[in-house]
Amino acid sequence: MHILIMPSWYKTPKKPIDGTFFEDQARMFQKQGHQVGILFSKHTLSFLGNTRFNIESKIENFIDNGIPIFYSMTQSYIPIPGRIPTKLDVLQTSLAGYRKYLEYKKTYGKPDIIHAHSVRWGGVIANYISNREQIPYFLTKHFTGWIIGSKRHANAFRKILIKTVENSNKTFVVSSYYKQELLKKYSLNDDKLKVVPNIVSSIFYENRCETKIENPVRLVVIGYLIKRKNHLMLFQALKLLNDRGLNTHLKVVGSGRNDAFEKELKSFVTINNLEKQIEFAGLLNRLEVVEAIKESHILLSGSTFETFGVNIIEGLSIGRPCVVFDSGGPRDIMRTKDGILISKKSSKAFANAIQEIINNYKNYDQREISESCNKRFGEKTIYDIIFSEYLQA
View 1 (cartoon, rainbow, N blue to C red):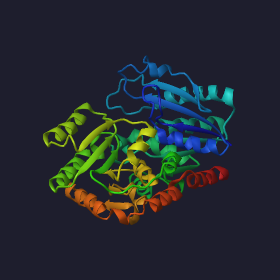
View 2: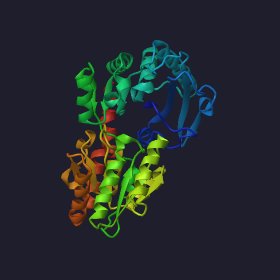
View 3: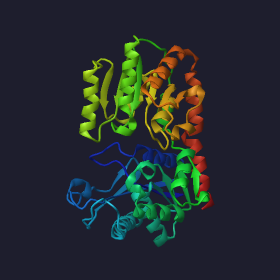
View 4: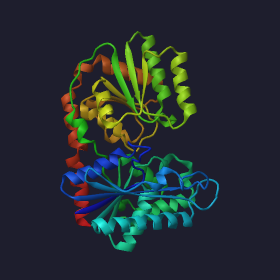
């Protein structure tokens, strides 16, 4: 088949590691012998700013290890406060995306399937192209903001989501929890939604290995430095463990989207004399993330809300037990054999769970953890599910 993937965010020269799980899916189809292309459309709702003139608005199309990537960058012409999309915004980005699609089609031919990731703006443009070109399109929903973001409850957003989902051949949602939340909050047809987990990249399973607990106990957390990821609670848990005399070291992988909040986290570390226990590693590339997990004993996730939890399956795929807050999506991931899923959201509960894993570390079969994760979330499993839907279309 010829499959055109349309993510709503993707890597650019300024952000070279954005949208890695979208690329994972593209590579999955490429490995199976399909023709694959990527069309990334970004539309900025803010009227102010320099998106029209900066380097990202002039990104050249290129071929990335056999996959052609086309970019379409637009910015709203309407100075409306609140960043709410208008019909003109939808038309503007749809027409721009369609023009870029025609460029792609001229060189690579008409695709058999379009697969969009997230509604804004990949799903919107996929819907438009599907209508113009009579191509089946599928949508995968990842984004947390449709459930917890206040702007997503605006009528304009709701209409966009419902229309994009209902017009798709099938919309894949990454966890059963996310599906139920969408059905509760929006008027969607249950039959349109199918739970299909995210893929764990094969690079993690290929680097699976076992380790023995030792001092210091090495912990790792992976995620943007934003409040929802709950790093401050993790640091408080680490302080409790430190006060109990446990020798731990936490590597914090990820960058901040808010300088003030990142400073707040680093200030907490300094004030509580945790500089030796907590290391800010910054944003790492895929290979560096693999090494960070391999060097660790336990992977942590303190997020208060997750539609899935890619960082968790990356840890499990290498063989590391995890300590995870029950933030929704991880319910489809975590087994008792994989670590501890915490229902009580407190630093003390998290510290107790980490200590329990440490005390019983030898009981966690790291090889079985890795094998089970790959069986449930590996490329072959997810490929078979998605491709069967393509065939029906």
